[in-house]
Image (cartoon, rainbow over all chains, first blue to last red; front, side, top):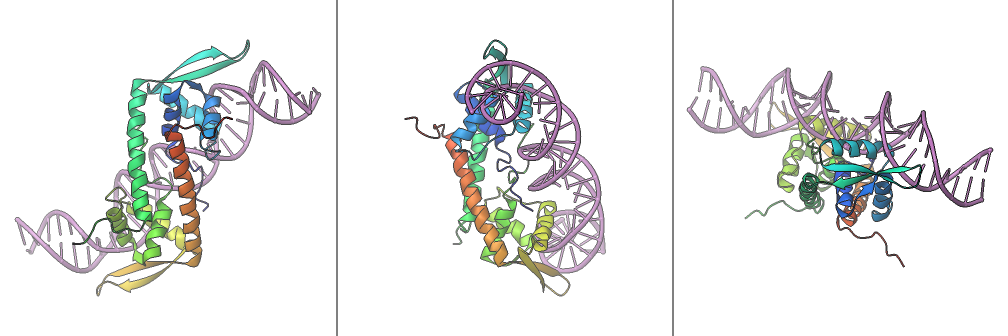
Amino acid sequence: MTTEKGLLSGNTTMLILKLLEEKDMYGYQIIEELAKKSDETFRLKTGTLYPILHGLENDDLVISYDENADKARVRKYYHLTSKGKNLLKKKQSDWNAYKNAVNRVLEGGMGYAIV
Amino acid sequence: MTTEKGLLSGNTTMLILKLLEEKDMYGYQIIEELAKKSDETFRLKTGTLYPILHGLENDDLVISYDENADKARVRKYYHLTSKGKNLLKKKQSDWNAYKNAVNRVLEGGMGYAIV
DNA sequence: TTACATATGTAGATAATCTATCTATAATGA
DNA sequence: TCATTATAGATAGATTATCTACATATGTAA
């Protein structure tokens, strides 16, 4: 009944794409940057993020490449493709429409004027 | 891959409670009013709305009563309880925090200044 | 040597919403 | 009169998103 599961609900992909628009990042870094920028409101679980990244790569919205962090450790960086940029644009526009519609309902207005 | 299932994702209950805060309504009316106020952005499916209303009643967030629309037809009106009003307040505050966090990420800022 | 941070990953559970279907009556139009 | 649409409420089952929990492995600090 709590109803507030993950808070993110639906916009996770948009936020990930947005971060990758600014610069290439690896998974762990995405989690930390998103937490920082949202002031800890969003802290993705690995079980949420990695499957999403794999799905994005599978759909050619991002491409990945490996880079060595130190001798033994390898980081998997993700880069936004132009297809991914287009999806991001669409998702941002959807978000704005959604946000505005919620606000209209919460502001209790009439929807349209009765003349 | 569409990712945009219902658009509502998570805030349906808040929007229903908000409408009921203004006046008592029956299910069908909630669907129409929400569609009107959101300029058709949100048009709840009956399979979404009625289970939510039953859940709200079960949790004492709303109470229902029957009223005759005409000789044969009965409408089931829902009334927001004080418990429901409190939940609405909390959900509105959660929504604002969420919305602001998303906007912070989309505006591409730093989250906080490095001094 | 214990613990924590870094780093990636999968399996299974849960919750929210949707699709699809069902039952009825009233009103409208052909 | 017959078909369609609007009104009104409801449930079963599917889908999807995200979570919890686990698994693996290295580097670093206490």
